[in-house]
Length: 191
Length: 277
Image (cartoon, rainbow over all chains, first blue to last red; front, side, top):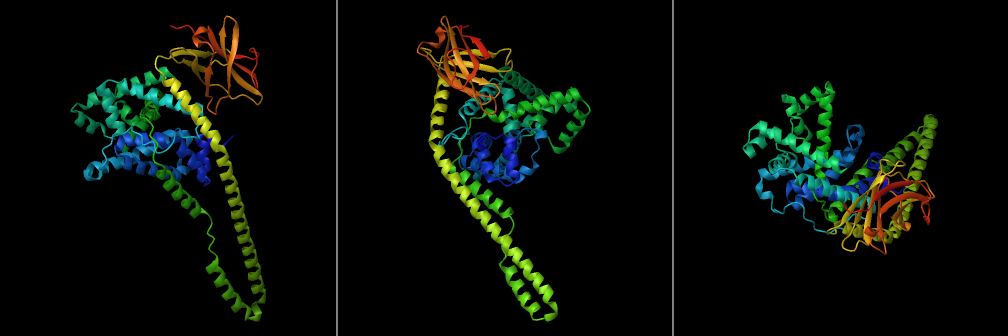
C-alpha cells in the first residue's frame, strides 16, 4: 500500500507523529475542494488561498485533537475551513476596502494540474459526487437554497437570515428544515 | 415541533450560538428519535461543501504551507545545541580537576560527557541516514512521474466519456455473491462503441484474482476488460468494443484469475440488462 492509498484517519495518525508527508498527501487530496468551498464563501481568490493555507496549517497544528468517533476527517476539515473563511469574510464585510478582487467563486486559474496522486476511480467518483450534490442544491426552491446559502456559506444566524430575507423567523425555520429534508431525499436516492 | 427541534437545521448548518448548541445537545441526549433526526440533518449538511466545484489553488500555497509545516516539525525535535553546554562543562571540569579531593567526581563527569557526545554522534548518524532515505524517495518519486501522467490521461478520458451528451446509463447490480455492489455502465453516443463502467462497494481481491467485465450477447459473453478496486471499493473501466455496446443484451462482472479468462469461470458479482428503457 502506497502512502497515497492511506485512509484519512491513518494520515492523521501519521501527522500526530510528526510526518509532514502525511499532510502533503492530505493537502493534495483535498486542497481543490477546500479552495472551491472557501472561494464560495469569501468570493476573493487571494483571500481564499490564504484561508486554504491557514486551514491546512490548523489541521497540522490541531491533528492531535481529531477524534474519529465525532465524525469523519473531511467533515472536521471542512468545519475548520468554513469557520476560518467565515471569520475572514466577516472581517472583509467590515472593511470593504480589503475586498479588491470581486471574482465570484468557482473559476479555476488552472495554474496547477489535477491531483496526479488521486487514482482514476477516486477522481471519477469524487467528480461524480460533486456534481450530484451541486445538482441537489440547484434542485431546491429558491427561497430554501437562499437560507442554505446565508446560513452555511455566510454563517448568518437565524435572526440575521430572517432580517436579510425580510421573513418571519418561523418561516426561516421551516425553509431550512425543508431544504435539508429535500437534499437528504435527493442525495440518499442517488446513492 | 418544539422550540429546540426548530433549531435542529441550524445546528446542522453550524450557526447556533454556544448556548443554543448546548440546549440542543442536552435535549437529544435523552431523546433517541430526536437524536436520529438531528444526525440525519448533520450528515446532509456535511455534504454541502461538495456542492461547490473544486478549484486548485496556486502552487505557492502548498510551497508556503509545507515550508511552514517542516519548520514546525523540525522545531519539535530535540534541541541539538550543545555548544554552550560543552563550554560550561569544560570550565567546570578544569576547576574540579584543580582540586585533588574531587578526582572521582571529575572522572564521573568526564564519563557522562563521553556518553553525551556519543549520543550526539548517533543523532548525526541518524540525520545522515534520513537524508539518504529522502534522496532515495526523490528518485522513486521521479520514476513514478511517467506512470502518473498515464493515469491522468486515463482519468481525463473517463471524465470526457462521462460528460458526453446523450449517453445511455445502465445499472449493473450486485448479485447474490455481492448484493451490496453497485455498478453503472455509461455508453457514449452516437455509436455506442465507447463506454465507461463504474463500480463501487466491491471488496478488494486477493493476489492472483481480478475483476473481469463482460458484454453478453447472442454468441455468449465477450470479455472486454479487467480492473481492480481501490481502498474504497471503487473501480473504473473504459470499455471498448468493436461493435456497439448497445447491440449486446447484458453486461456483467465476474471474478477471474489474473490475466482474465476466455469465458466466465468465477462468481458473477454484477449483472445488468442493456435494453434501453
